[in-house]
Image (cartoon, rainbow over all chains, first blue to last red; front, side, top):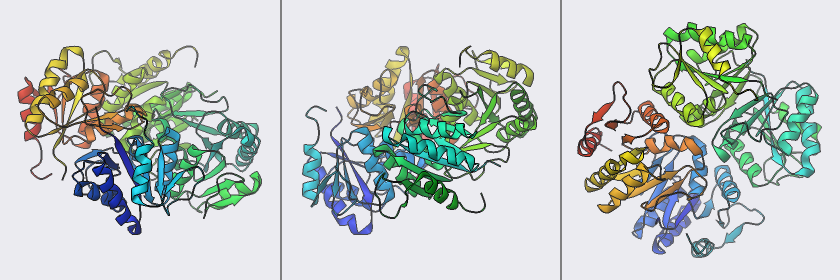
Length: 151
Length: 151
Length: 151
Length: 151
């Protein structure tokens, strides 16, 4: 049976240290880290997960592995551009958003459409009715505690 | 050459009258109305456009025309579920959002990612940096005036 | 209610004259012509349809109208690359294949998966169990006669 | 850096023993096995890979893990229905087809569009210009020898 998977989404150089910590903590808790597979927050989360011996999956938008970061164990090549955002959040049993702009907001929204629990690591997008966390530790705690008992 | 196309997105019974008016005004101004092809705001916008002799396109999520409303001249069947939202906003030279929940927010966000002008008809989602309109007339004016000169 | 839509797929300079004739005949019979919206057979089918006063829809792979041919009334911009092939055939009540290489074979196959009637205009791909036509007239006859009574 | 990934596609109860052997041999050779994640040949290939201690990824069409087989280490949930076939073959550095019907032919075709090497394990689809193998051993040899030196 596949392990718990948590999608880490977002962007922004200012948020990479937080994303790396989120990735590391998820790996320590045994969760596979799923991202969009490219740079910035996506790379940082994967790097953090690998630093703790975790497993990482990147779901990239292009038709080849081009642009995939070096901390991915597995690269899923979708060929569907921004539509791959749906696969990123759908593949998370929970989703943690770190920073980010419009693409991240689209992913947060799609996660809600699909019923995936979402945690926004502050500051990040300010949305009513979304769980917020003030630290990477809290974000990971909230994400993992949001999962249904039985996967 | 294809005419100007404006995507109308959103949901909510309280917003259908506004959406119908938006559709009617777009048709009167010569714009083709593009929607997600199903009910609620999508159906109202298409109904409004047809009441003024306009042209309507619905881009539906399923693998058949099932669920498409009756005011569509053309039904594009995508088979890709929520990923069809990308096609809805990408097919609009501009986008008008009327009401809506998470799916609409995903579409507004994707429109920004793709660089499509977006107008939110109030109340609707409250987002920084998005153009807002207080009436269907203003929404249509703002959407059509946002278009580049040359298509 | 949306009119009958027939998808015309394929590629190859040698097949453009046939595709143009297929487009023209479909328009004369009142069917909307759906294609992938770009050049070669896609452009020829749309050109033929417009020469007979028909209606044309192009479903393009990119994130803008870039590359869309000039004989399209409506351009659906999908942003999903080759995955737009699914939308092309799904949007046809029937599918006519004119020439073509691997991309066309993928579309013929997806049409079968979705249960859309397919007619291959000879020579084209040689596949067991697929209806073949020896002329554009026969291809259009077979495609339109394959439709269920009630759309 | 992500390891070599080989997509195993197909369907048909008669082909499951072959698919299981293909999965086992790929795992022994160090390749990650990528499939569409559901039953039949997809499940058999994953089962074979796990029997040899390999790693398996399933790329499923729905919006949840529902239907995913039990031999998957990682489940990528795409939510895009048959459009997930593009991701399956795009994620393979090479593709091995075992049995299969129209959906498999679509995948073989898309793999050619994307330039992925394809090996058809006999009998399977009979297509000009596609490499064929008469045994699981030969299929795996041919697939792995088709890879570019540098990944």
